[in-house]
Length: 463
Image (tube, rainbow, N blue to C red; front, side, top):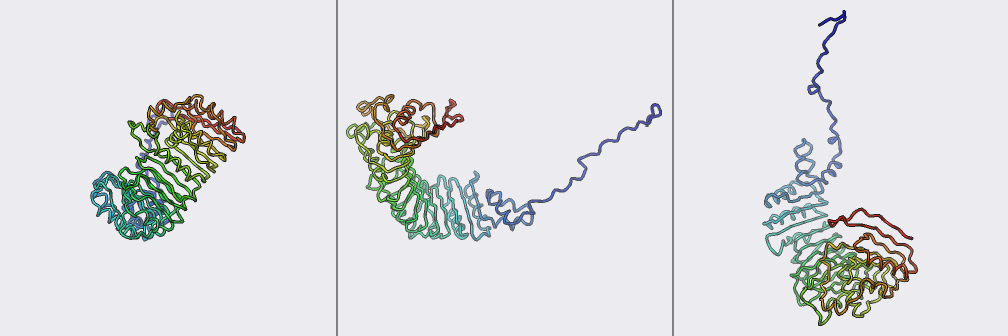
């Protein structure tokens, strides 16, 4: 110790090593949670993580098998190894009422492994089943095991590349929601689904092979969605006939090769969306009949839904209506109150929109969903000889014709692209002039950023 001027100077002691200090133990809040709450948390995790919790403590190996929701998503491993894990997990499950099971598998080679997965799910009284198979080894896809058709616990069923081929009746007495995509529905499969699902409310069919049309007599069915129609569909008929007397909401969308659509016995319809594309070969001019098949199909469809309250039409369908309009064919009068058009507002859509407005004298609401020009899959390939013969002045189209919309009260354009400005503004000017009951116009302006994305929008309300 050194001294200076009678004062003692002591060297300060080094600070204690904080790393050696005992850390206070944090309370184990997770273990304090009740089993029902922990099971709910586990139900939100992927199944592979659920199983891993078994190594946390002595409590968890007995807890996770009671989880009521299991989600298996393909992780890139060999399919046999993945499905073996699925089956082992389901076998260890002690849940007697499995609320939800999701299995997503890529390119499985063994149907037997998939059959075992489903049979285990059936034994657990699964309620919500989502089976998503991609690139099954067999070109025709995976045929569901016969045991699944008697699984009376099902409430919601979603299938991808899973064929519905029942040998006998279907008994899905509690099923309310059925979605089938990229699947084969041969013979009387649709009929068996109709008779075997007395509680079914929603049916969605996407890109399915449907052999004998769609006839659904179930009184419970409220919504029917048909997206696309597989080109492998066969049969003597050149059209798909749809009959569903109880359906209130109908959507027909997607790509439809060369099959036509026909509606029969759809008297309960309230809301209809027609936004499909029927492929046509560019080199076929069709000058000899001016696209007669397409014209007749759209005319008949509109006649079949003339009683609905809400109608939505897509760009391709509107272009077919334009063909009818330039040929002087009036559309069937409709009782529709709300009209929605999904359009790019191109020149050859203008006559179709005008014809629609003329055919809906009671329409009170008009929604114009302007679509991006970056996608052209929905463009009707009109032949040059047709467009030359029926050509018209698009820039002055709206000012050159009458547009009676006397009952129209509201016009909404959710995405007002500046690239669509010319034809759209001309239409609005005509509506302002002729819609004497108009109360409100809502425009949501957007602009492109140069790479196909839209910038922030600003709403403008006019009342």
